[in-house]
Length: 254
Image (cartoon, rainbow, N blue to C red; front, side, top):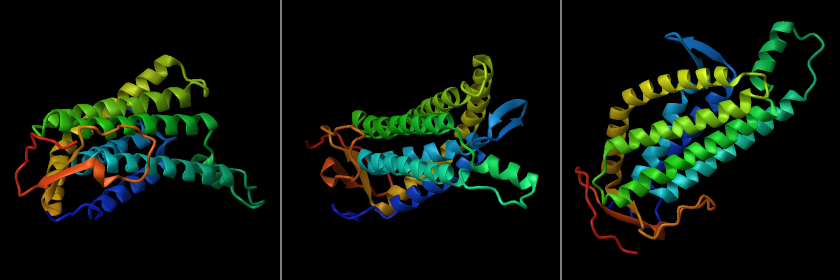
């Protein structure tokens, strides 16, 4: 095998960096609502499908141990950025600051408590769902994995993120449930459309990563799918050679 136990997978840091980068961009679009093809969509909703697919790619290529670490990293990014935003929004305006700049400043940095809470809870629950379902399904199906599972996992995860975040964020700001539902449905239509277009690309990326790493990774059958651990444990993973075909592992060691 190209990758012995104890060595870090070389493409995992790249995927994790992409998750963090996309998440940072999403923060600045989270308060922007746009009309797209007659649907009202939250601006960050256009990028979240990419972020969630990255969690599923990590789960499929590297197993739950690394997928869970990616979730915790995303949680850390949320707390870091919202902490910075809370500090920045308390700083006084310059006496000569133009009103247009003040409005731009407020758009970027003035997040309410409910927006912060909704974003964190939505992301944690949605990401954790993807982090567990994809690697667990791979083990349950003994490698005979259907791409429909990744797509459905992606859709459900996206719905969890959007519905939790939008409800918690918008109800305290005076939105009615019908308005929130319309915003959720509009965002989900766009998300699902993007997910359909991205699925063949995700499939190619997974294949190329597994081919480059030279191994196919599965969780142990006794894997504990708990969120409460950060560092990956290589003893919880099983690896078989990958030589350009989707390998099937029918007998798992405990």
